[in-house]
Length: 240
Ligand SMILES: NC(=O)c1ccc[n+]([C@@H]2O[C@H](COP(=O)([O-])OP(=O)(O)OC[C@H]3O[C@@H](n4cnc5c(N)ncnc54)[C@H](OP(=O)(O)O)[C@@H]3O)[C@@H](O)[C@H]2O)c1
Image 1 (cartoon, rainbow, N blue to C red):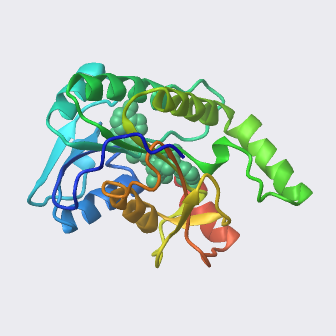
Image 2 (tube, helix red, strand yellow; image 1 turned 30 degrees about the horizontal axis):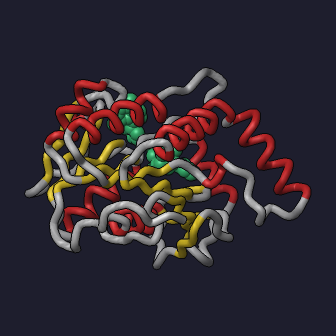
Image 3 (cartoon, rainbow, N blue to C red; image 1 turned 60 degrees about the vertical axis):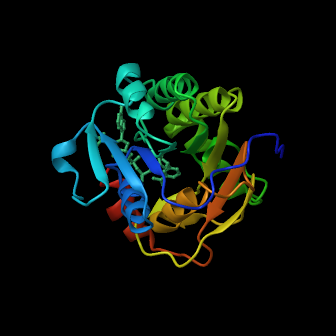
C-alpha cells in the first residue's frame, strides 16, 4: 500500500457528507458520527422518510448522481463517506460510477481530500473461497444475479483509484442489521462471510483519522457472527 498522501486530519469534530444516508448502513453512519461529535450532512432522495432529527445534522434532499447536487454538498463539507447502494437487477446499473464521477470532480474542485466508500468483497473473488460450492455460489452472484451491480462497483473503484484523492475503499461481505461487537479489518482481504452494519459504520468513521488503508482497500468483517438462512431471507433478501 502506498502512503504518499498528505497526513489525515487530526482526531476531532469534522463536517461529513454521508451519501446513501437513508440506507440501513447510512443511518448507522449518521447516528454514530453525530454521537462522536461530528457535524453531518445526510444526502437522500427521500428526506421525508429520514428518521433522525438531531443537532449538528442537516438532511439534504437530492439525487447523488446529479453533479450540481454533489458539488453544492461537497462545498459544505470536509470529508465524504459513501454508502450508496443498488439492489441486484439484470438491468444496467450506473449509480455507483455516476455518483463517484461527480464526487471526485466536486472534491477536486473544492480541494477536499478524504473519500471513504463502500463497495463489496464480492467485487473480486476471494482467496478464502476454497470449496467448490463457494466458488459456484460466488460465480452465480458475481457474474449472473449481481453482475450489473458488481460491474458498476468495479467501475467506481477504477475511477477512485485513478484519482488523486485520499481515498479508502471498504469491502464488507454480506451485511446484516444485528448488533456487532467489534470489527476485524485487514488490507485487501479478510476471512468472514458477514459484517454487522453497526461495525461497518464504526470502521467507516474510524477511517477519517486512520491512515492504514489510505489509497487502499480495507476488508472488514464481524468475527463470530452467524445468522439463520431464514433471517437472511426475511430481513435482507425479501426487504429489497
Ligand atoms: N446488503 C449487503 O449484503 C451488502 C454487501 C456488501 C456490500 N454492500 C454495499 O454496502 C453499502 C450499504 O448497503 P446497505 O444494504 O446498508 O444499503 P442499501 O440498501 O444498498 O441503501 C443505500 C441507500 O442508497 C441510497 N441511494 C441509492 N441511489 C441513490 C441516489 N441516486 N441518490 C441518493 N441516494 C441513493 C438509497 O437511499 P434513498 O432512496 O433514500 O436516496 C438507499 O437507501 C452499499 O454500497 C451496498 O452496495 C451491501
